[in-house]
Length: 81
Image (cartoon, rainbow, N blue to C red):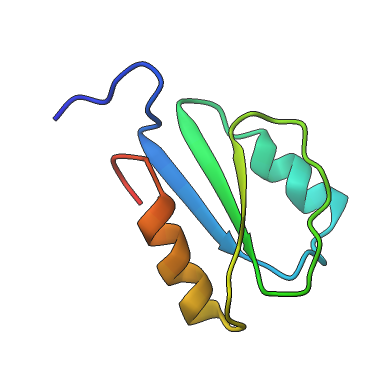
């Protein structure tokens, strides 16, 4: 199956509570290629705006890494997740 021009080849997933460093974010965003970055937050946490169109912000209805990862798998559009 070939990925379309707009469909990312790789989805990079990160359950988070938003306490990552600016350095971590810059290193993540320095990844080149047809990728999407999915940051998923637990309920009650507000995500900071990230001005990169490859970044998707999702909010889980439940706390915990497992429910957050499940939500991402249902919303990832990359050929590889």
